[in-house]
Amino acid sequence: MATHVALLRGINLGGRNRVAMADLRALVAGLGHTEVSTYIQSGNVLFTAAGETSTDRLAEEMTAAIAAKLGVTAPVVMLTRDELAAVVAANPYPEEQNQKCLHAVFRAAPADQALLDRIAAAVADSMGKGRRDSVQSAGRTLYLHTPDGYGNSELAQQLLRITGTSKTAGTGTARNWATVTKLLGLSGDSHQSALGITEFHSGKVTRVSQRAVLVTGGSRGIGTAIAHAFAEQGDRVAVHYRAAVAAAEKVRDSLPGAGHVVVQADLADADAVRAMVDDAAGRLGGLDVLVNNAGIYVPHPVLGSTYEEWQAAWRATLDVNLTGAANATWAAVRHMTAGGADGQGGAGGHIVNVGSRGAYRGEPSHPAYGASKAGLHAFGQSLAVALAPHRITVASVAPGYVQTDMTAEQLATPAGDAIRGQSPFNRVATAEEIAAAVVYLASPAAEWSSGAVLDLNGASYLR
Image 1 (cartoon, rainbow, N blue to C red):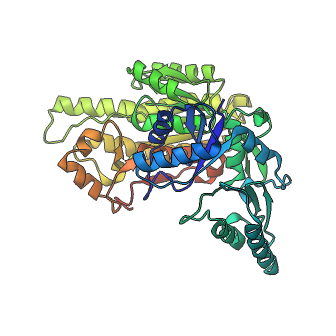
Image 2: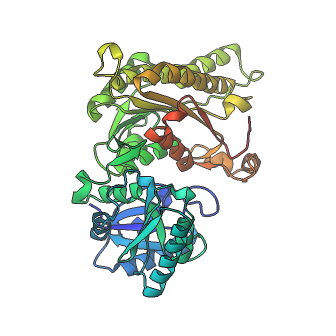
Image 3: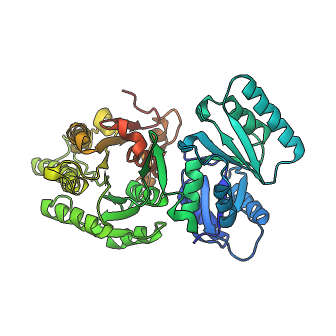
């Protein structure tokens, strides 16, 4: 059970202050804290503090460590679990059903009278323009209500400037209400059964936490980042591996939360795939999300391979990257539609395929890989149409180069400069950036993205 929640401003997965969540967790653990986890783009850290230390001192230490070890400036607002519970309990807008229309602005200190006067003037100006936005204050938290939408709120922008929570100054930060209540639930607070486990979508309450998620190829690289991203939002994850059992178990043990498992199968073995999916569903209590991430990348240039090598590379690549994913999907859909007559109805679910930029840009030395990923994209689009009546979404991501343990050696050579130069950002993606997109596509909010192939290549290839 976490004792504290640190709210960071200015840290993100991409751009100037890019920080990997694993690095942030390691930094906080290095300060002597335990039970460390992060939620959403490294901006929120939950942990159990080492010793009896004030929240001000904890915030100072974390801010200094982030600057010294990660090289970025990230003001920190520190809350105890009980303080966060009090913020939730004091919500003055309990009738608001859309959590995106309610934000909590957390400050390092309570608002003084001068600040309250400036806020009152801003609210009066907003009301004079016919806006329905309002603000209420409690301790060092301000509750911002924007019934017409946060993005359409002039008051929201004024409030960020007045309170010093803009991108340029101040020691405060804002969170929407879905994040606030989710953090309370993840902290292990006793309010969790009633708070922090629901997300509002189209005016309806949809349970999204504690889903059962299967990630193929979850023992390393992008798969590990995807497993962490789902676990950090409260889901239970099955980490699939082919042969690296120790690595898979290490990933499982590193995931926040409980109920995670490892499952084994060679994706080229159809019977093993079906048994693996059934095993995952049985141990997780069902299956809500399947991420087809596993793949192999076997070199076989057309002019540099024997005919036997050429055939073997094509068979092995398609067996894992395309047919293996298709078989896993077939088996997963049986669980997602369970409970309906003749496969109709059921709980529904989400399937996300990890494809590749190579499906469009080409893979000269790995043509079977490019073909397998193009087939995976097309497969996903066909299934998106077939499964929509069963409330199952299917979408794909198409990453370019990604920084992982598998690409680190190549990226450290002179060829790495050319690879980074393919993008106008002059870098490659982080595994966490790919994971964030996968988690979104597997969310209720992304239902209308079913059938899409989302390019994640930093503008290195545009189509």
